[in-house]
Length: 214
Ligand code: AMP
Image (cartoon, rainbow, N blue to C red; front, side, top):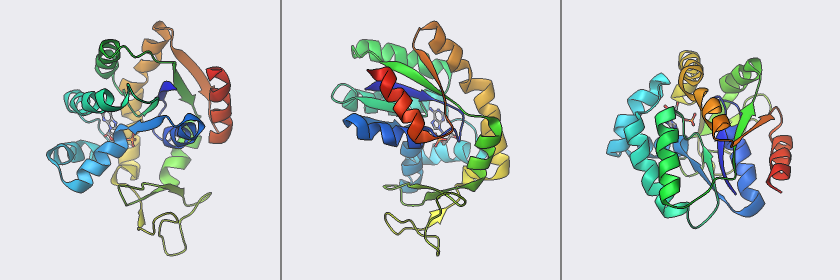
């Protein structure tokens, strides 16, 4: 499959993307995961990105496009892909449209995950993430906690609260979403690619997406 996942922070894009990869071996391409790995490795991209990410601001479009052009040229032609967290702005969506056109790749559709604000806020403040950049397993202190001593059940690394998941950063990320990323819903509606899915339970959402792919 070749799809884009849209949705506010905390809408469950990461979880839905992972479940979708299990359906047909398509790869998940998450700009957030790529950036966090770059921060951890201390690359020049990571250093530049970190200041924006810690505040809950978007990383500049030029940096994101440089990173994604390489990634899509390498991956997108070979396998299906699920874009998770990209594009996030209209300039990114326009650049992606041109890039896919050049690579002669057509999207199946764009999935917009609709989740009530209260559910999003609750999810974001209770979310924890494995600190190992190669794992990044997501936990929830209420519904899916890590081990009793705060370790990842998959790889044993420490499970942390991300710096951009403090209350101030969360408020800023949600505002940024409303100001910049929500505009993409209109963009893809005009392109005739948008499909909305009410998403409370990720497994049910994936079933619904699977049906629309048939
Ligand atoms: P995420 O894990 O997708 O919520 O991304 C975490 C952070 O990485 C965001 O709050 C942004 O600072 C940055 N980020 C991820 N994807 C993008 C993107 N497509 N454009 C700009 N910034 C991004």
